[in-house]
Image (tube, rainbow, N blue to C red; front, side, top):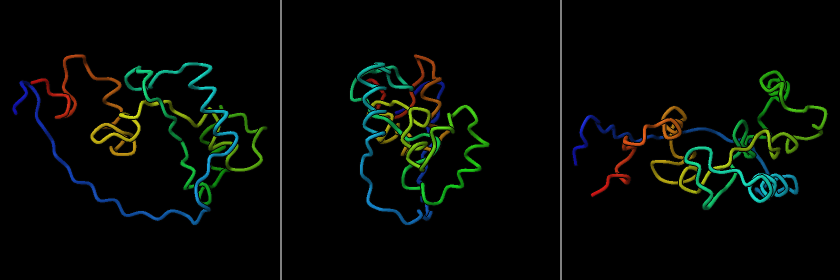
Length: 142
């Protein structure tokens, strides 16, 4: 289907990276507290679309699976706004509100939309798109 004044770019990405060894993922008490505060208390909408449906939190600056490979001195330099006086272990930064982005399920893990599925410059376009712009084939109205 041709959409007027737009062109489709179809890509297949193959990613080959290593993760540092780590224990199986388990939600920390701080992560549960952070998620509850951002969603239930502050009622933060999806950063992309503003929806309050199926909200999840995304580790933004650092993913938990990478914790054992992160140089936290570099993180301190990159993120001076974080309260480093509270830092005792990686989860203090990784599971903090500072490191979270509230997203709806579509913009967190969804095909053609989720931050886990798209390169960041393409992902962030969804936040900035015009109302009449069609971002992906699943948004084409018949």
